[in-house]
Image 1 (cartoon, rainbow, N blue to C red):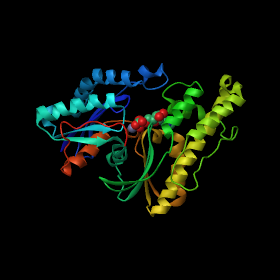
Image 2: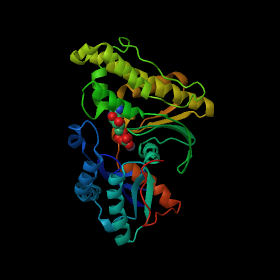
Image 3: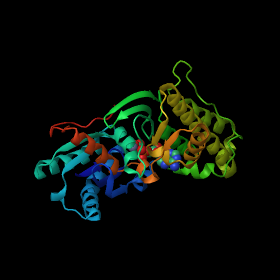
Image 4: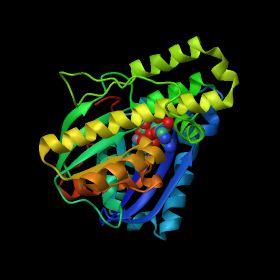
Length: 332
Ligand code: KG4
Ligand code: ZN
């Protein structure tokens, strides 16, 4: 079954053709980051307008690269939420129009579930059950995953998402947008021990994440040592200290979830899973504890439509159909 996936939940316009939820025939991502960089973050109205301009050419490119025509598509899948409403609406409207005219079924895909199912687009997909850590710009969620459509939330961030913290700290250090990649590059040159930062914990909720205190601690360090902003070496130390704290927070809770559930497999996905230091620490920890680690390649970690097509495939196989009057959603 060939599914055309469409993803427009934030600032990437993406389309992909995936066969049987496993084989990626094409995956096209048009990023908008240069549009938003001057504002230091995603501007929803600008994102929506760019999606509108890009969506049809991106879909055409995905069909061309897959070597298929629209008539050969068996089903449609579009991100339904969570995300920016004005952005989601563009992808969903196009998906509905295609489903209606082609008379094909449509799946409304949960963006975070799609991030998890990206692990099934790799050569060695995980077996069920497994723990999934989804670390993106909007979410930091831990799930126990029993099946393609069967996942329980074990923990989440009570305030900022990990990616959001990367973006805010990058802005504070005047590194620009998107923040994660810039912090990672700078941190490579720094020593995390120079500016010690807290490792926030909530004793009564050990699987809950919190990153706003860490961000505030970075603000305090900059206030205490304003020279940091003028000194690239000091900036690198602070970026490294921040990154190390986020990585420790993510890895320790993921392992706690593995221990508490007795699961032996861990999937880590979402944009922050592209972070090299996080990947390195996860690999070391997996090696030391004998857990099986599944880290999708970078292009499947950041937003893409192949993951949406894969998630949509399992929904369509289960007989789930999105009504053509269904709405998109921002949270959940
Ligand atoms: O999953 P994603 O592409 O979009 C959302 O669904 O939010 O995640 C985007 C987030 C941004 O906050 C970005 O700064 C972060 O992922 N990110 C990174 C890296 N690459 C992207 N964070 C840390 N290190 C990276 N290399
Ligand atoms: Zn995402």
